[in-house]
Length: 287
Length: 317
Image 1 (spheres, one colour):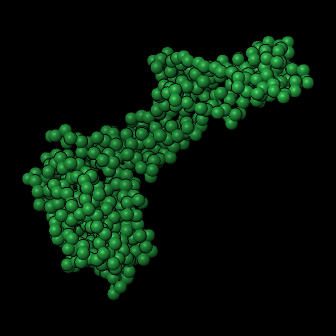
Image 2 (cartoon, rainbow over the protein chains, first blue to last red; image 1 turned 180 degrees about the vertical axis):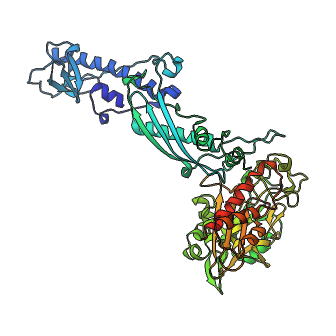
Image 3 (cartoon, rainbow over the protein chains, first blue to last red; image 1 turned 90 degrees about the vertical axis):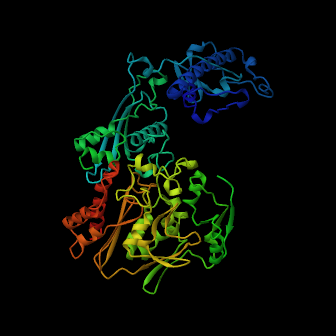
């Protein structure tokens, strides 16, 4: 919806979304490439609609009676003919643009009509297509998301406990589409990172093959209190594959050894992940 | 979960009668019991669950009386943690109660339930009784030869090396508490036992009525420390409660043995000495002097146990 508003020069509030479940319509997200794939398709579709709007604005300027109303409407009924001359008369669609809720004349943006006056017809546009290949799928032939993450830990060498003081993340998602979602995604992957490297473990009984860490006490997901601070800096180089140069973020910051490397940096010893106190103490020669 | 009857008891006599049939379980907060029933970990399943929270007079109280603190068995852990008297005078208990599980569990779980909970062992607790272990009447302790990284470092009791997971138990032992049942009064220290599948000395028709804690000797201070992997909703890897500074020192560890482990050698090591870094560290070393070299995978708990003893002692000064 943000993309549609942007392309059509409208406010976000002017866009309504109707997902008609009767037709089994499902927005296809493209998995880890979701916002970039769908926003790309929406942008293509919005531009098709925009061309139709500008075309209709010219047609209705040339032939006011034809633009009197869409099907099922009452356009023209009881309506007085516009007395002011239509500013689009004699122009071509490519001479027009859309901005601030209006159809305007490119050469003189002061000239224009509110969208509701410029175009009376009901217009539709559809688009389907395959989004540009995700950067991460191009095997290094294109510039991918550039992320840097840092981790600061405190290791209690008497108990083997590791506390992550903070994560630092600098990420270039090309273009930030929705900052809160982006930050949420980053916090989420740092939660994965914490759990993977400090706590989460499938433990199996060697003799029977049965899993022993069966429940959420023994398979330890990170609790809110264990979630470290994440300092985030966002970059927008606009070199992504999708609309406005965005390239998404997905789980690209999730990693398996950032915390382990920080522990090594703090203590000089390598610990297998998850770095539970037993392993840390063993690595330190204290168990 | 299988179906069972639920009865709201009106009196303690009714509870005792109901438990005598051997097919009835007592419920207070239910935070441990319902988990065991949902996972169907035991050989037997209760026909009836009797609710002790509804008895009159209520077992939900905290009061000072006759030079001691009396806490009803059905008093919720959250209320104990929030009580200003307990915070000031029986600090270790307050700190222990505040570290049990997470807020929702503390709002439901009771002090009686916390000390009567069943052991934590992933073989014992595996759903659908997949490991019919020695605690349940079987012939084998699967942890002995299996994955025992979090098990007892002070040997087995009745063939079992699962650890007692209570946070409040070591605090009560350090504070010299007594457990009053419907039949007798037992020193907290003598309350715990591997009593298949129970973790206490309670007989089948016996239940906890009250916990009594004598006012600490003049000058005594207590503290509790817990090491768990997570900061919330986690059982201890090791925990420790101490009371020092007046009378004989008392030091108790838990999650290191099948029952709370009173570290008498650590008590002797610190007795009569000022609590400082060196003396506290020496007490820590003494606390694990009798630890076993089995299981190999759990040896790290010695290092943690001695550190917690040292730090709990230092926390009192």
